[in-house]
Image 1 (spheres, rainbow, N blue to C red):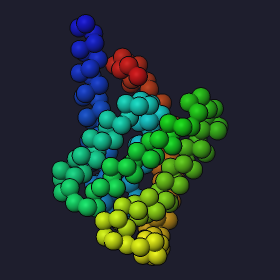
Image 2 (tube, rainbow, N blue to C red):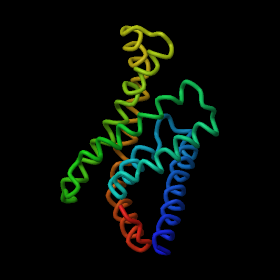
Image 3 (cartoon, rainbow, N blue to C red):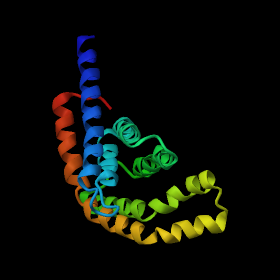
Image 4 (cartoon, rainbow, N blue to C red):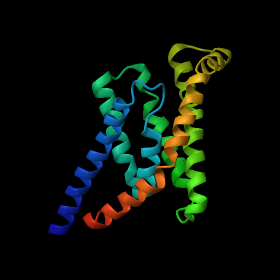
Length: 177
Protein backbone atom coordinates (compact mmCIF):
# COMPACT_ATOMS: atom_id res chain seq x y z
CA UNK A 1 0.00 0.00 0.00
CA UNK A 2 2.75 2.42 0.97
CA UNK A 3 4.64 1.56 -2.23
CA UNK A 4 1.57 2.32 -4.38
CA UNK A 5 1.23 5.76 -2.80
CA UNK A 6 4.92 6.40 -3.46
CA UNK A 7 4.56 5.31 -7.09
CA UNK A 8 1.51 7.56 -7.58
CA UNK A 9 3.39 10.49 -6.09
CA UNK A 10 6.37 9.79 -8.36
CA UNK A 11 4.01 9.58 -11.35
CA UNK A 12 2.47 12.92 -10.43
CA UNK A 13 5.81 14.65 -10.05
CA UNK A 14 7.45 13.09 -13.11
CA UNK A 15 4.54 13.71 -15.46
CA UNK A 16 4.05 17.27 -14.22
CA UNK A 17 7.75 17.91 -14.75
CA UNK A 18 7.67 16.41 -18.26
CA UNK A 19 4.71 18.63 -19.15
CA UNK A 20 6.55 21.68 -17.81
CA UNK A 21 9.61 20.70 -19.87
CA UNK A 22 7.40 20.72 -22.99
CA UNK A 23 6.01 24.13 -22.02
CA UNK A 24 9.37 25.71 -21.23
CA UNK A 25 10.99 24.23 -24.34
CA UNK A 26 8.34 25.88 -26.50
CA UNK A 27 9.24 29.30 -25.13
CA UNK A 28 12.95 28.65 -25.41
CA UNK A 29 12.53 28.30 -29.17
CA UNK A 30 9.95 31.07 -29.70
CA UNK A 31 12.35 33.08 -31.89
CA UNK A 32 12.55 30.22 -34.38
CA UNK A 33 9.62 29.95 -36.80
CA UNK A 34 7.69 26.75 -35.98
CA UNK A 35 10.77 24.96 -34.70
CA UNK A 36 10.33 23.46 -31.25
CA UNK A 37 10.75 20.27 -29.25
CA UNK A 38 7.06 19.43 -28.76
CA UNK A 39 6.72 16.78 -31.50
CA UNK A 40 9.95 15.08 -30.48
CA UNK A 41 8.99 15.16 -26.79
CA UNK A 42 5.50 13.84 -27.56
CA UNK A 43 6.98 10.85 -29.36
CA UNK A 44 9.69 10.34 -26.71
CA UNK A 45 7.14 10.33 -23.89
CA UNK A 46 4.82 8.01 -25.83
CA UNK A 47 7.58 5.50 -26.56
CA UNK A 48 8.59 5.55 -22.90
CA UNK A 49 5.27 5.79 -21.04
CA UNK A 50 2.74 4.66 -23.66
CA UNK A 51 -0.82 5.64 -22.54
CA UNK A 52 0.45 7.64 -19.58
CA UNK A 53 2.23 9.98 -22.02
CA UNK A 54 -1.11 11.74 -22.41
CA UNK A 55 -0.64 13.18 -18.92
CA UNK A 56 2.41 15.38 -19.67
CA UNK A 57 0.99 16.18 -23.11
CA UNK A 58 -2.16 17.61 -21.55
CA UNK A 59 -0.23 19.31 -18.74
CA UNK A 60 1.57 21.11 -21.58
CA UNK A 61 -1.70 21.92 -23.40
CA UNK A 62 -3.29 23.28 -20.24
CA UNK A 63 -0.22 25.37 -19.38
CA UNK A 64 -0.29 26.86 -22.89
CA UNK A 65 -3.94 27.80 -22.37
CA UNK A 66 -3.35 29.19 -18.88
CA UNK A 67 -0.43 31.36 -19.93
CA UNK A 68 -1.69 32.45 -23.36
CA UNK A 69 -5.44 32.39 -22.87
CA UNK A 70 -7.94 29.75 -23.87
CA UNK A 71 -8.76 31.42 -27.19
CA UNK A 72 -10.07 29.81 -30.35
CA UNK A 73 -6.47 29.29 -31.52
CA UNK A 74 -5.98 26.92 -28.54
CA UNK A 75 -8.77 24.46 -29.42
CA UNK A 76 -6.69 22.51 -31.99
CA UNK A 77 -4.06 21.94 -29.29
CA UNK A 78 -6.59 19.59 -27.71
CA UNK A 79 -6.18 17.15 -30.60
CA UNK A 80 -3.04 17.98 -32.60
CA UNK A 81 -0.61 16.40 -30.14
CA UNK A 82 -2.99 13.50 -29.51
CA UNK A 83 -2.78 12.62 -33.21
CA UNK A 84 1.00 12.31 -32.96
CA UNK A 85 0.61 10.34 -29.74
CA UNK A 86 -1.86 7.96 -31.45
CA UNK A 87 0.35 7.45 -34.51
CA UNK A 88 3.31 6.73 -32.22
CA UNK A 89 1.18 4.27 -30.22
CA UNK A 90 0.37 2.43 -33.46
CA UNK A 91 4.04 1.91 -34.29
CA UNK A 92 5.50 -1.46 -33.26
CA UNK A 93 6.96 -1.39 -29.74
CA UNK A 94 9.86 -3.66 -30.59
CA UNK A 95 11.74 -2.16 -33.53
CA UNK A 96 15.46 -2.42 -33.95
CA UNK A 97 17.24 0.89 -33.54
CA UNK A 98 18.23 0.67 -37.20
CA UNK A 99 14.54 0.68 -38.17
CA UNK A 100 13.21 2.84 -35.34
CA UNK A 101 15.44 5.87 -35.97
CA UNK A 102 14.25 6.55 -39.53
CA UNK A 103 10.63 5.63 -38.69
CA UNK A 104 10.50 8.00 -35.71
CA UNK A 105 12.29 10.78 -37.59
CA UNK A 106 9.90 10.48 -40.56
CA UNK A 107 6.77 10.38 -38.37
CA UNK A 108 7.97 13.39 -36.38
CA UNK A 109 8.81 15.30 -39.59
CA UNK A 110 5.47 14.42 -41.22
CA UNK A 111 3.59 15.69 -38.17
CA UNK A 112 5.39 19.01 -38.45
CA UNK A 113 4.77 19.16 -42.19
CA UNK A 114 1.07 18.37 -41.71
CA UNK A 115 0.61 20.68 -38.72
CA UNK A 116 -1.23 23.40 -40.66
CA UNK A 117 -3.41 20.82 -42.38
CA UNK A 118 -4.30 19.26 -39.02
CA UNK A 119 -5.06 22.71 -37.62
CA UNK A 120 -7.13 23.77 -40.67
CA UNK A 121 -10.45 21.96 -39.98
CA UNK A 122 -10.79 23.71 -36.61
CA UNK A 123 -9.91 27.04 -38.22
CA UNK A 124 -12.48 26.46 -40.95
CA UNK A 125 -15.21 25.65 -38.43
CA UNK A 126 -14.34 28.50 -36.09
CA UNK A 127 -14.01 31.16 -38.76
CA UNK A 128 -16.64 29.96 -41.22
CA UNK A 129 -14.24 29.02 -44.01
CA UNK A 130 -15.53 26.89 -46.85
CA UNK A 131 -13.35 24.13 -48.32
CA UNK A 132 -11.60 26.55 -50.72
CA UNK A 133 -10.94 28.96 -47.87
CA UNK A 134 -9.52 26.15 -45.76
CA UNK A 135 -7.21 25.07 -48.62
CA UNK A 136 -6.09 28.69 -49.06
CA UNK A 137 -5.37 28.88 -45.32
CA UNK A 138 -3.27 25.70 -45.57
CA UNK A 139 -1.45 27.08 -48.63
CA UNK A 140 -0.70 30.37 -46.91
CA UNK A 141 1.00 28.53 -44.04
CA UNK A 142 2.82 25.95 -46.13
CA UNK A 143 6.17 27.72 -45.80
CA UNK A 144 5.92 27.51 -42.00
CA UNK A 145 4.81 23.86 -42.18
CA UNK A 146 7.89 23.07 -44.27
CA UNK A 147 10.08 24.74 -41.62
CA UNK A 148 8.19 22.83 -38.95
CA UNK A 149 8.78 19.55 -40.79
CA UNK A 150 12.50 20.29 -41.20
CA UNK A 151 12.84 21.18 -37.52
CA UNK A 152 10.95 18.04 -36.47
CA UNK A 153 13.12 15.97 -38.82
CA UNK A 154 16.31 17.23 -37.17
CA UNK A 155 14.95 16.90 -33.64
CA UNK A 156 13.56 13.44 -34.42
CA UNK A 157 17.08 12.05 -34.10
CA UNK A 158 16.87 12.76 -30.35
CA UNK A 159 13.85 10.48 -29.82
CA UNK A 160 15.74 7.20 -29.31
CA UNK A 161 18.49 8.57 -27.03
CA UNK A 162 15.99 10.52 -24.91
CA UNK A 163 13.51 7.65 -24.66
CA UNK A 164 16.36 5.31 -23.64
CA UNK A 165 17.38 7.82 -20.95
CA UNK A 166 13.79 8.14 -19.70
CA UNK A 167 13.40 4.34 -19.65
CA UNK A 168 16.50 4.07 -17.46
CA UNK A 169 15.18 6.78 -15.14
CA UNK A 170 11.80 5.04 -15.19
CA UNK A 171 13.35 1.83 -13.89
CA UNK A 172 15.05 3.62 -11.02
CA UNK A 173 11.80 5.28 -9.90
CA UNK A 174 9.62 2.17 -10.42
CA UNK A 175 6.91 3.97 -12.39
CA UNK A 176 4.41 1.40 -13.57
CA UNK A 177 3.05 1.44 -17.14
